[in-house]
Image 1: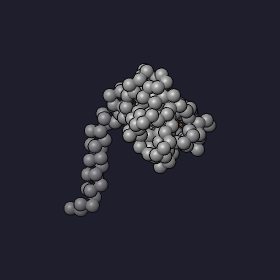
Image 2: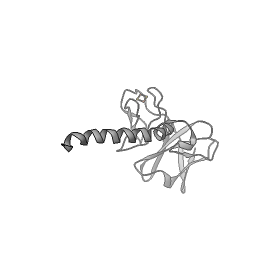
Image 3: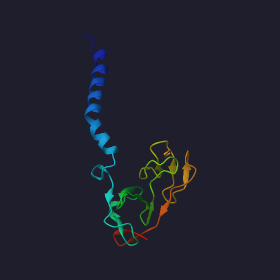
Image 4: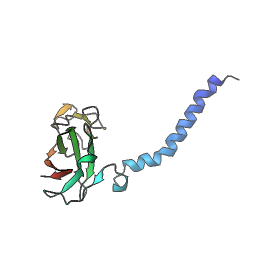
Length: 146
Ligand code: FES
């Protein structure tokens, strides 16, 4: 018997099984339930002075999707150690939620638009406008709405 012909078939079955087992989790992660969201929940009501994140939870060069009171979300990013910004994470192309920065760029997973984490400006379409900034400031170890 030649094992080289059964190896790939066996791998396909295992991969299919893995997808089948992971699918419920993947689907749950795509849902809108706050319990499955990867962001944190703001304790505030969306008013000036409300904390939206702990500074330590916003990685330098990355960011964090935050669930605000109500159904709003906020993308808090930290382009450099001393610089924190926040944007409405709704992609201006067709409304998907953009991902926190990776590799120096904010990317929309739906059609690949890319945005500058420091300004929210478009780097690559199909989006033609940038992300809408939400003013925040750092107060000690907290990121607050302005
Ligand atoms: S919805 Fe974001 S690029 Fe299309």
